[in-house]
Length: 82
Image (cartoon, rainbow, N blue to C red):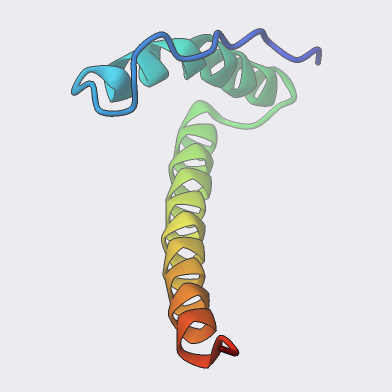
């Protein structure tokens, strides 16, 4: 399966509609992935559940990474040689 083109953001990070534009941008790739899994033989409900669970795991990973980055920044500031 070839990669689907996902357009870059056109709104600044602080724009309240940016998350909606991101959803629009990834929608085609997401639909193509679901369709490919169904065509491979997975049941539509299995695919939907798997996509939700993978997305949830990704969100948790992002949250953990942000927390780790914050902790490392605090550690570096605390122990920075003067």
